[in-house]
Image 1 (cartoon, one colour):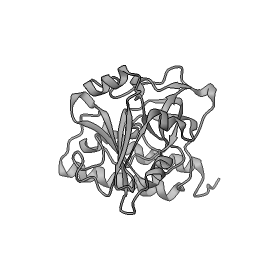
Image 2 (cartoon, one colour):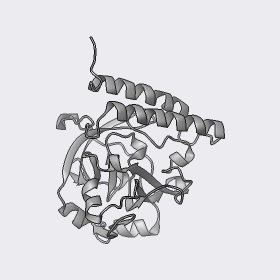
Image 3 (cartoon, one colour):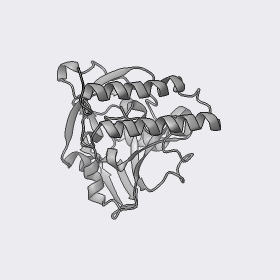
Image 4 (tube, rainbow, N blue to C red):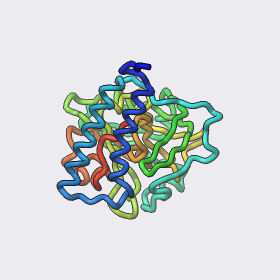
Length: 257
């Protein structure tokens, strides 16, 4: 039976086929070398995956959403599960009442939003599957404010190309964690700044008080403990210049599925 170019099963098969090669190359998180030859291979793989994904999926195509019966009894936590910085511990001790999200960079109006202010904005709830590059998946219900709505409030300048998510945690006690999306993914309707998981406030282990949900991306893009959004034209001045904590260590910047 022939399939249409936009057939979801075909898109899923091609996307997983392309990602499989990258996953085999990556293996464990800290096993990636940064030789010039390996980095060129990663870059070429990422560019191919992104082009294929964008060719086969429209800007508005949605990741699959599930039913309440599909929700896992406990959503698996990964990466950092309890940031140790004094500032974060102070915020957590006060139930994040003093926490604010800063939004700056290439915007018209740099702003700060309290957790209450974000909760007062129109919200979206979605039940989706988290796919980790390490090979496991978990389904959860997320509630939060669409990232695009926050960006519209600050006014994104024409020169901005990416949103960078600066986080409170330092994975393994090392460099500050950060991630990024291009504006196309940032404005996707399923891209949320999530503050609730399974109908309750986001637990610390899962990224409290605010984490990214970008449902068309693999799990390492889903930054937790988000403190600041920075609109940028390039990543040259951030980390090692590759757009994310794991990308700086050899992962592909594009992680679309």
